[in-house]
Amino acid sequence: MKKRGNKNDEQRKEIFEKVVKTNTPRIYKMIYNMTNNSEITKELTQEVFINAWRGFKSFRGDSAVYTWLYRIALNTVFKYRREQAREGKKISIDDITHLATEGNPEKFLVKKSDQQLIKSMTYLLPRKYQEVLVLRYYEGCDYSTISQILGIPIGTVRSRLHRTLNELGELVKEKI
Amino acid sequence: MKKHKRFEELIQGYVDNGLSNKERQDLENHLKSCKMCEEKLKIKEKLLKKLRSTREEIQCPDYLIENILKNTTQKETPVIISSSKIRWRYLAVSAAAALIIVSTVLLNIENSNRILTTKKPQEIREQIPLEEVEISKSEEISLDKKKVEWKEEEKSIMKSASKEPSAPKISLPEEKTDFAASEKPSETPLSEDMREFAASEESSEKTPTLSKATKAPTSAIIKRDRSEESLTFEPEEGIETGKIPPAIPGGVPAYKIISEENFKETRFVFPEEGSVVGKDFEIVLILENPTETIEISLDGEKIVNYTREKDSNVIFIGSDSIPPLEEGLHYLSIATKEEKSITFYKEG
Image (cartoon, rainbow over all chains, first blue to last red; front, top):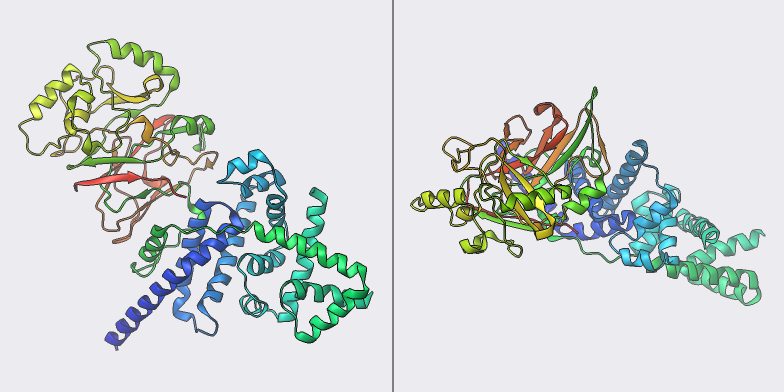
């Protein structure tokens, strides 16, 4: 029995290593687009996979691995933001705009462009709007995939995206 | 209005390519006769174009995958590194990670409750621009009872000290980052004491070639001289020079090799820039090699009480495992016995 258990463990490790190699770039990119900070992105990406590894035993394979990872990644990013907020690190619009240009300070010096402003505005949206926005427009997921990741009906994905863009449009209109 | 509401959602589906053929047809027919919906479609398309243009196609660093594997499948018990626990930026050490790290630490300790804060973080950033440091060595390196100072205002003192023949000093070459390549003694002007030391060590097979030019007295103040863009080593006042006691019994004398241009990072500033570290803090070190045998010292005192799981590359040093820190300069060093080179590199 014990031997069999070890064999299963080895197989599990092997599979998970493939999962890590295949999905790390994707998860890294997604988190980066939500934080615009490479240091934080590295930390959080590691955290995503460490959490995934802990839960990998109970991963039943009902959905594609990457959708499962996306869900963990979203939870990780928002947990991180909550912690930041709890520590009193409230972020002002200027901070956000600065965040959005981190790594490209010259952009910031030249002009706070509309694009950067739009990106910074996305951070101000409610979580449920940010989730659909990131998955659809940064990750390019279709409605069906978003529906799987978030566990909501496809119709809700569309209506939520509609409200997300309306809200974003309002926020941007105030600033531009 | 109800009709328009329906079409507004269809517009969303339209821009997302998420409509059925029938829905698409319905909307296109409606758009021909409704200027308002047509306008909304244009606004949405414009916003989306801008939004999509903000997407960054960023590549993840290769070593991240390796680090993840080391912390997951290659580890018996996964360690959760909570982002909130990380009080120190990752110290990523190259795979060949024998190392000596001297961290210039400015701690401002508020009296009663041991609150540590960085002092003038911007100043620190300017003073210690770390980017890449390579150090080669072949024997154990450790630091003992040494203070590290980086004070620009002291450069005048440095200048005068360097003129004193009695003040041993090593000026490291500006351009050298790989000390294994720096073998010419002429490039590192040695004091009389250091020459004596180097000569006495010539016969020793063990001594790394470079250490002759880089060994400094055990008790030393390392100061930075901005005018020469180099670091200088000086003996601490009252310390007998010329004799270099081993930092660890059987070990080689402590020394520190570093040059100005290597410091292009604030990675070693503790606490992290701009942060306030409370009474209970934790330093997290991440090595690339999980099997690396290391020794950690704080202000020359060996730390033995840190947390590191078997064959883990993650090391936690809790505030409860080190003696109370006094106000002033502190440094952290990590030493190994193996012959390796070390690279501190900037991430991202």
